[in-house]
Length: 263
Image 1 (cartoon, rainbow, N blue to C red):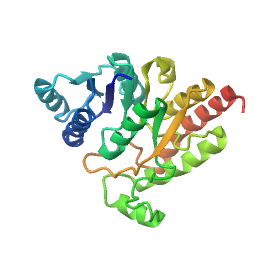
Image 2 (image 1 turned 135 degrees about the vertical axis):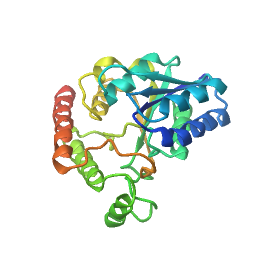
Image 3 (image 1 turned 90 degrees about the vertical axis):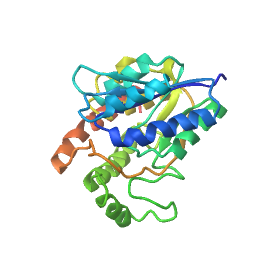
């Protein structure tokens, strides 16, 4: 397989994190001797220094690109726009907040090009850990919550994320354990706009997993520890009611996917 890859980073005011993340991704792609690559930043209306940063990086490496969206902000459609603009058949996307460590990115890439399966980064399989976990042999929930409370992330967001993943797995009965991962590498031609356009936030990922399962496309989950945010504010809803409101579309999407899979 020719080593070509498009990495997509949907962003909104992530300048400080991108300043670290983009050079790390560039280093991985050079170390892994990619024939061709691109790092696509899809910006959703940042008012920080994101655009200037990426334009500056583009001057020294034209493989680093930015596209600014003019329509209403949307995480799913930002990801789709990056996929649609991607030059290469192999595409990967991840959060731009630094939660996916460069070691995990490298491991997903190596596994994908070795096995030629869809590879998902997972917090809920062996080797994985949710935000606040710092050691695989110590996944104390209370310690994790304490660590998150000291970061720019939301403890409530962490709790609801864990609960919703368990509930979504009960509904969908999926072999994929991290149904809200948003950290994946696969072939571009597996994807279509319809998988993204009816979603509000991260529930688009359920549509992708369902499509892959229905199509009998092999999937491999790789555990990684989700890092706490170092800079900027979390995009996750900040109150219990906001979190529940955002969670309802996940449940309705899961039931729809369950019907599609005829479970």
